[in-house]
Image (tube, rainbow, N blue to C red; front, side, top):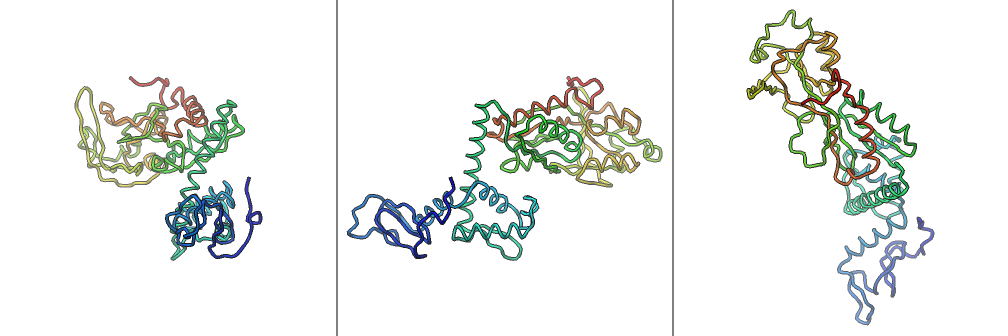
Amino acid sequence: MIVQASDVPIHSRSVQHQRGRLQIGQNWVLDHGSRNCHGRRPKNDTSVGSFTSFHNLREMHLGLTLALMLNSDDLAFFSVISSASSLAEGARQLNVTPPAVTQRLKAMEARLGVRLLERSSGRLSLTDEGELVLTRALMVAETLETLGEELSERRQTIRGHLRVAAPYGFGRRHVAPALDSFARAHADITAMLDLSDAPAARLGHDCDIAIHIGERGQMSSIVTTLAPNGRILCASPAYLANAPGLAVLGDLVRHRCLVVQENHEDVTMWRFHKPPNESSIIRIRPALSANDGSVIRDWALQGQGIILRSQWDVADDVANGRLVHLLPDWECPRADVVAILGERNGRSRRVGAFLNHLRRALTPTPWLPTGPWPD
């Protein structure tokens, strides 16, 4: 139940005390004992209870006011705005106009009687009260989400909001169709797909699942493999017809190499392995680079140079002769498709259901000739 300000007795704006309750601003809140505005008990007061400072009184007042005057939508709104670089950026994330965001923020501040954000030089910064509201907002959001998940578990239903981050190309080609069919199968699910060149960085309160392709590095979160995926060194026949010879790995330094900037990896260092135990590292100088793999693939098809790309992206082009697999005796580091989960989100029913749905959509593996897992 939301109690509006009109439901609370209105008195003066000053800080006053009466036995059994405290008044700050226009709202009465419960107190354990009568005190003056410095937090000290009057000499003739024998009631039980204590406040250590006016700062504690302010936090108590703001916390209780949050419960009385804000609802979960307000807290969700503020958590988005407080993490945005500007009100305009927050408006884009919320899919509303900047004036609407400004008006709602001012209304919240008026209801609480405090300023939540400092808006100077086009940048946002939280006030002390804003920090407190954000902390409480995240706690409330997590509590409500957990409650919804527990109720869904009891009803054996899949519901709630699913947030997925994925690489640009793979997200468009494979994750988006799977998310579409998953939402159609579960009417109580809402979902958001965030395409990025570094989806793992979105993990946390911004997303439930991050689809990652590439080197795993030092991942401390829960990781589950969705599909096998290798990498292929390749170029178009048109490029190879006019390019220098490529007989050994060292010849790569004489070629135009195209790279995709993603996952904050060092894309100028290409690693290779030849069974049983031969390895080599080649430092290349990129002729062209982009943060979207589909752009790099298109450049390679147009004869711009050599690429080192995932099987999921170029397997069809190699099979149909549009690209040529180069130096096939050398293997590149694997880049399996994995899902990275937060510890709490890894236990969510909707997260688990979507992962199973996506894994089924990728079985048999579409980019492998027969779909088996490699040895």
